[in-house]
Image 1: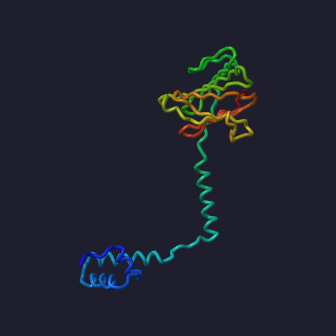
Image 2 (image 1 turned 45 degrees about the horizontal axis):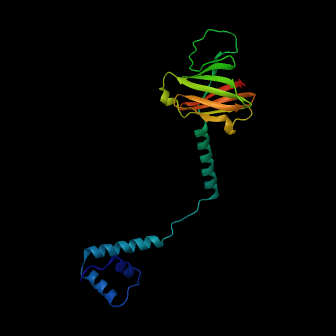
Image 3 (image 1 turned 90 degrees about the vertical axis):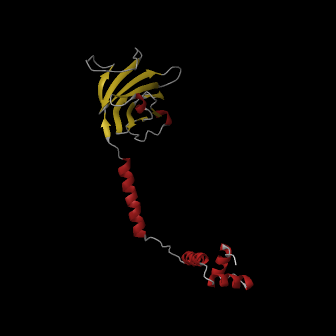
Length: 209
């Protein structure tokens, strides 16, 4: 006879096959069909494994330890190297000689500053906003070791020193393909500027707006 179907072998393993069909499948197996015998054995092992309950629960101590390890790992991952920027040039400060390179044009109604942090230069210009309260903070990230296209997508945020989250949407932006960024309608006050770069985070403290 032809080999029985998989469904018939399964039904035989589960003792659900009856009558002539059961006798026919059992005779086929007893006749020595190796393929069907192997399938029948494999189905039996799968049924046995499925019926076994290997589940278990962790103890409270293990759960607390696992949560603590996760928090430690998360804190270590969140901690980035900090690059403190130093002021190189300020258009409102006393005249000084400096190796200043900037693509931002300064005007009489704006304030131009250049900061340096590790391999990066940060040009910042503050301009009075037109037809609305507040000022614009326009800047550009410069790096002699990177191509202009590699300076895009850097997270930029300005926050008051007592607000490390910089949660206000108006004080968050990112750099474009030239490394430039723009924050609008910034109210008067003192701010810290944070720029996330691949190597860590640039911190420009105490910018007076």
